[in-house]
Length: 69
Image 1 (tube, rainbow, N blue to C red):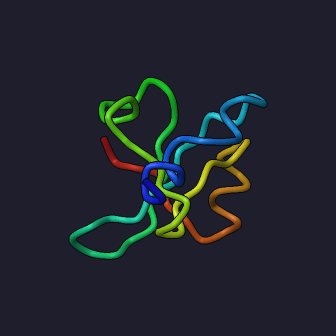
Image 2 (cartoon, rainbow, N blue to C red):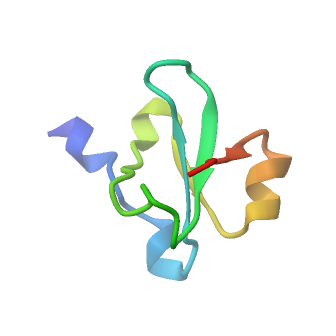
C-alpha cells in the first residue's frame, strides 16, 4: 500500500500540471505537459523521486528535460 500512496497525490490539486518522471530504461529526468502524447499515461511516484512542477521553467531549472513526444 505504501507504493500506492506515493502515486498521483499533491500538486495537481493546486493547479500544477507538469508531470516529471524518471525513465525506467535510462534514468533520465523527463517532464510532460498537457497535450503531449503520453501525458495522461504518465504516472508520478514520489517515492522514486518523480514529481509535479507548476511550470516548464521550474522543471528545466531543476534539471529535467521536456519529452520529445
